[in-house]
Image (cartoon, rainbow, N blue to C red; front, side, top):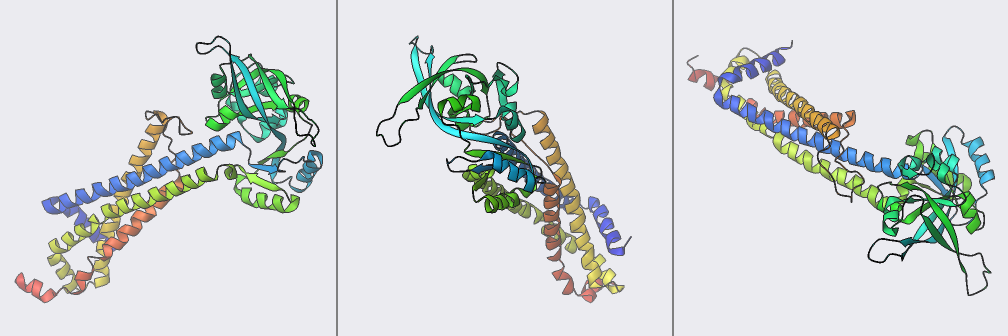
Length: 414
């Protein structure tokens, strides 16, 4: 063991015999534990919120969406391009068509026994087989007449539980889809037609707008209402880390708009990133203030050990080695306190995930406070704490250069 590290251990061990040093050491240790623990825990909670939100949004939508801005796509040729040129990056594709309809239902809620409830919604046509390969919307079905998307036939639809509650309907209820008939485009008039359908499935995504404004149906049904066409193609990637690269490549190759699921919610994604950075900055400042107690502790060590330091210098120990002693003291205190703080945060993270005691309102995409502690957060907190301790350990060393050995030893009668 090197001499500076050995002396650092001896100084820390002897501090228990000095009340002032021992008290200051305890305060310093506890403050760093709380500072680093809070930083790690909040970072884990922010990571958990971000991961849970991304998982929910990405589950409803696919990794990438090829959009033709309402114009029809030639899906057969597009699928051939995706299969031959992007076979190593794209796992699956699924066609989609979007239209606007009005849904009407006879409701028995309220005082009126036969009130007519209606709502303007987005009708999304899907292929039940391929849709399950690009999104997890089928896992969010809470009630259905048959397995998964098998309940979607040429006369049935799936709606969100929020929309069903607002319309006052339930699984198996009959509703009407009011849509604009395909009439002469040169005419100033248009005709509305009705199609009677059955609610074959109910889903709950946790996204308010989706649960209240989206109707999912099969192409077999939608092609009865509107001309047969495909306006979007949803894609699932084999490697999500290459999302931006593949998105740019597809835009250049197809000359079409290619959106990621993040592009559908830009304010939310930006808010999550900004909130994460803001919390990191605030808690890093808190940790910095807590770590500044190391400076006070080292100054006290310098004053209490001034005779020992003078003797070491008189015996020929270099100033650099003495400075290294105090750097080791700061590092040992910070590392041990940071380790305890991270353990405390890990325990709180396990507690939040195992016993979800803190329930969140419906405005969030999760029901309880999530927390995800990974090695990136642990490494970032540990490196930051170590950097602060090293910086703090340099301040008291400036007084060692102006120390007059002869005057100190003369006062002792040496």
